[in-house]
Amino acid sequence: MAEEGYQLSYAPCDRRVRVEFEGTWIADSTRALVLHETRLPPAYYFPFEDVRMDLLRKTDFHSHCPFKGNASYWSLQVAEKSVENIAWGYEDPFPEAERLRGHLSFYRGKVSALYEGDDEVPFLAAAPGAAHGNPLAAWLLKDAWKAASSADLAEQFFLFLKGTGYPVERSTVIMPTLHPQIFATVLVWRADARGVRVVHEPHDILLQPRFADSPFAPIIRGAGGVRRRIEDPQAKLDFPVVRDLHKEGATDYVAMPFRFSDGQINVMSMTSFAKGGFSAAQLGQMYEVMPMLARLFEVHAQRRIATGLLETYLGHNSGRRVLDGLVKLGDGEHIDAVIWFCDLRDSTPNSERLGREGFLRFLNHFFYCMAGAVIDSGGEVLRYIGDAALAIFPTAGGTAPACEKAVAAARLAVERVRTVNAQHPEAPPIRFGIGLHLGSVTYGNIGIPQRLEFTVIGPAANEAARVESMTKDLGHAVLASGAFAAAYPGKLTSVGRHRLKGVSAEHELFTLPDQP
Image 1 (cartoon, one colour):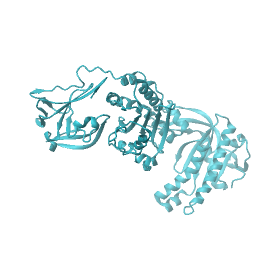
Image 2: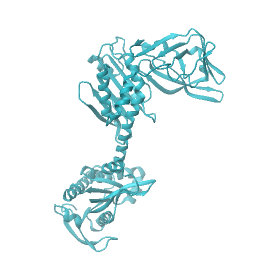
Image 3: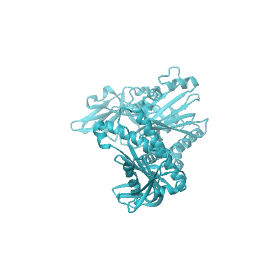
Image 4: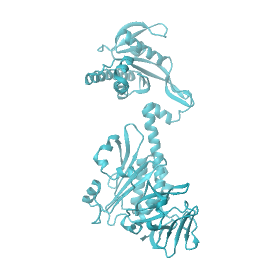
């Protein structure tokens, strides 16, 4: 098979070919095939019958070639020495590589010697005189770095393919991600639509037929790639997506794995509606650049994962500040904010009554009511302190609006507690206290260089905790300080002046007028 820009040809070797490892002959054949492929050294393929299969052990590793098929791998064990994935073969090759069925090839750099006749074949990292003429590689080196995101990279890459003559009309890229709510980021490109649609698939997609019955599921599990020449009357229509594309008149479908540096398997699919589909030259060029393209996708994916984890564990604003460079001990700033402090009541007796797993569910119900209300009302949860939580509503957009958001969050939290208690009558009722205060805090990194925490510190944060502690004595679930009441544009009810633990002088406290 030869096309302009890429060549792939098989020829029987007319000489005896042998492979030696550490003094042991592991292959000896007069029926070897030689594969000549553009920019690669010749590869010798041996019939299984001419290989010491008793010294080989099949592994779980697979790779994919878009025009040869999925390759299986074998490791070698000779005496005390072993080499992982030293040989590969295409057990069920694509039609254009059918001649490789029942054959194995060895990595020249992993064996001791390879002989053709009496002459040792030199180890070549590339075909002699091979100049890199792959236009995809040239584009990736020159222009791909400009992409601002994985979606931008995908759009630019497929538009370049289209402009270069590749008959690609659709593509989907799926990349699993490290996120408590998201299983994978999916990029969907269509030649007849503008931009790339980004879908964040939740973890339960693993149980849904549209994923479980798709080519993506086995590929991500390491089964290699999928190629279906849909226009071929004998084509296997074994996946719903392939059957749907067949009905639409598609001619070719390719789903290729690509790996990140940590071994994570991702998938890129391409669909063509052109007669003949993708050529060997086009798929060969794609195959060559997939590792480079994978690294570019990985850069964007790692930043996205870092952003997601920082936002999940630190909060949106705190995570963004860390990514912006506030990473050293002492980095931070002074800000004015509403400080919210909430605490769960009866933790010790409830933990004894509910047991470890039951109390964990109970605690998460509490945080759903409290922290969820804060986030849904525009605040930021900074930290969980056992069964308590510290949050802020910065006043950058105005002091009164920040106070209104905090009160809205308190009302929402109270309502959610009522709902959760009603939904779980078998569990002890959630009892809590919320303290609101307004003041200046230091917002930044504390701790030691080896273990930092991004949070707020200062007297105002301590006073918010002291205000919350008074909810136990005064019997009100929500209390606010005088400083908060003075800035809040709505109505609050005074509950008198009280001395706060560790705080000098008495302070007037307030509660919501329609709350117990």
